[in-house]
Image (tube, rainbow, N blue to C red; front, side, top):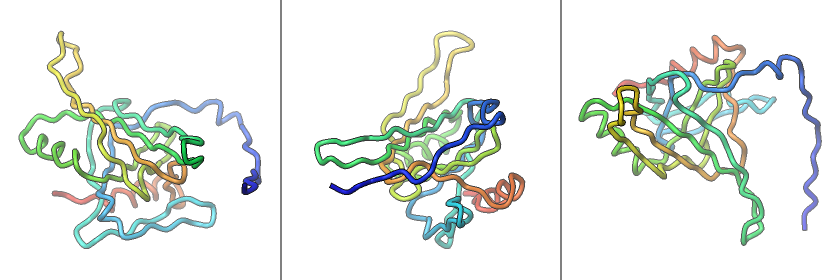
Length: 184
């Protein structure tokens, strides 16, 4: 059996203790097949994407705190292998037949997601193998304040934790991400 060892520790600072949960309203979604490559800097941050000719990220707008994203380690199954399940739950206000078609297309697509946390950090889910939709729900709600969004759940099996996307500083990173946005 291989000897798998840790090689560093994790520090906590006062700033770490003041972090807030939740995601910003925008969700950036790309087809896995449109991403030709990505690069990582020496610290391990993804700092650029290269897309197919017409590829890029589609910017989905919603409401702050409506999406969630995370991971769960799948440890030592039947094959004794370990991997990381990336999961994204997206909530969209689909109000047109075009919106419905996008959701129907997402049913069968392998997707990559970039989310922005409320701590001004960007994380990438499904970057190597993609995330596939595992559930989609929508209903009318039972009262005026009921949830009428389309709630879509995506899951992807990856070797690594979700990658962090960063280039120089927050403003540069946000501008770079926005430069990858395509319009249909």
